[in-house]
Length: 342
Image (cartoon, rainbow, N blue to C red):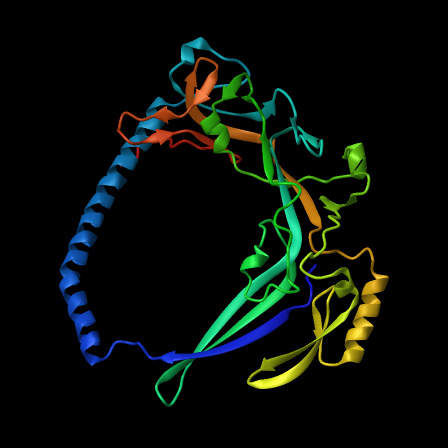
């Protein structure tokens, strides 16, 4: 949902500070002296890249010769310290629970995203060189109501009046992680769990919410909560009024009528009054400060793991070649090379 955009245009002029002929000659000379160093750097990077490619081939051959294919159902002590490869479905000891909204999921993690309906400022500037050598800069500040997970500081807006936002959200973004993630009879180390990517929206029903959130509305995978916030920088009468402005557009003064409660702007008072009447009929419309909360889970799926067995835990494996570590969790089946890479 997006609101009507307000626009304010400002025009400034300044002297052209671009470098003259001597300045451009100096820049070209500096670039010429720097060229040999750039060439040396490129040669060094090419040499290092060849070395990295050789080492990568060596480690892949080491993985092929070292990796042991196992079943993840059972832990064998004989494999401790070895590089193992297996495919199995992930599991957790207990569901992850959002402590505020009481949403519970059998998942690796549960992420709460909180968006606030608020004013956002967008700035665009365009330069034009005039015949007298000056640079004319036209800057347009536009203000639009939109959903955003970050709070826009309206105090820093160029035109804050009528575009004020709450200073903070009543609820914050949060991620709850499973204490233990299992791979058959094994436990994945924290580093391997962190390498598991994936996100899926969680469908929400009102019955899933705690009793103190009875006023919240639910649609699909979103919870919407009215904040009841109002702009304290203007009086209460301001939100049921029409404000008349005289503003400059492209160098010409024009009369603008603004509906204070929405920020919508019109060229005639009659249009503004019609918009105000519609606003009075839409008491359930989204207001500045309202919150929209959604949840995403990192689901439990069947994965392939290439890692080192350390007792009953799987951890990243360190190659004999310094600087190379393997600890892979993939949703696609990992196929190890069947012959040596040369």
